[in-house]
Image (cartoon, rainbow, N blue to C red; front, side, top):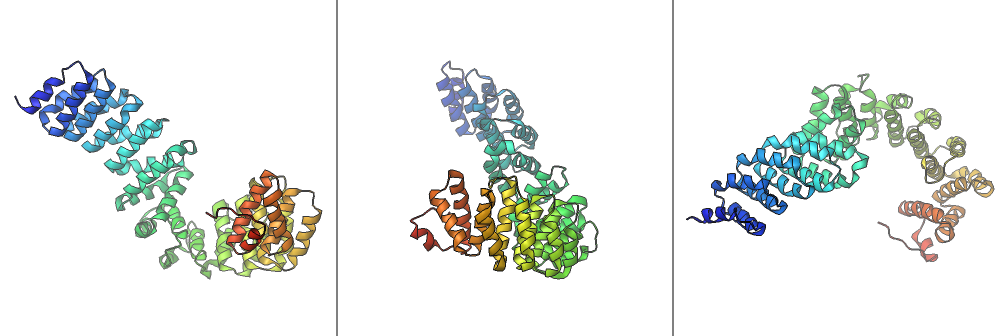
Length: 429
């Protein structure tokens, strides 16, 4: 009797622990005669026996086990998924990909979902890439985001990047933006493939490929995009790509972009104009302070600060006052704080009306924003208010002051020595 025969006999033992030991021994021996008997163990009453049989079948790497394992997957307990998906990933049969994608996408259990995602990563089948992006776009699935993202990253070789670019064809905007973000992270690997997509693709694939390149700060040479500057569909995206590198060739298109129907184009045209810093855009940026979208208003305010033109002070202050009805921690405060920092960049005669607001306003949110603007000008009134808020304010005010002071110290608008003087310390991570 061979060693394999001896262990096969022990599969008939009534003690599940004996069966488990035999299963692992058969898996380690690698004798393919054990495949069919081990497949029958997938129906054993003991969950531990079923799990060990799945693992051992993975070790044996015999494709006869694929269909039985997929059947087992349909009725398995959550605790069994790790063993089954391990075996399927070791067998490397593409037949397992679609079932694993479906479970990874639909299940709400981490104990089920994570092993499926891990197995798909090991199988490295590019069909899983778009579903992974869809998982990342689902705000209800945040527990899986880091794990899914890390698995996806390992799949993004050249073929994976090509598949990722196809996400730009999906109707779900969140999928497109997450795919774009991933491609930006891989700028050196993805750049040439994005160029190919712009030249050979159509529709949103071309548009989002240009958007992705526009955000790649490491890539300086984008001269090839010049050929698309007269394309009515693509010209605004091309202009933003050039503008974000300080290139003025598309200045007029960026100014036009401030009134485009797309919020993204309006916002990013304004931000690109902030890099170019050409005062030709001044009047259009003042109009953009009244845009219906807060991101666009904030971008226009930021750029007016970059232009450092004192003619912007009164419109900015009026815009700051108009952003009312919101607390500092909500959407309105995002625009107000951007306006405050813009006024701080302009400086000059802005301090007088800001001091008036700070001293006379009964709206504490507006007083706080005025203090931020004054502090950004290195005005002691604003700095002292923020430092006092750190030490003596309400919980909300302490949090608000802490967030702003950290940024102003980072920008060297407030000296850390002032904080030390007040014996205030916090982590600067």
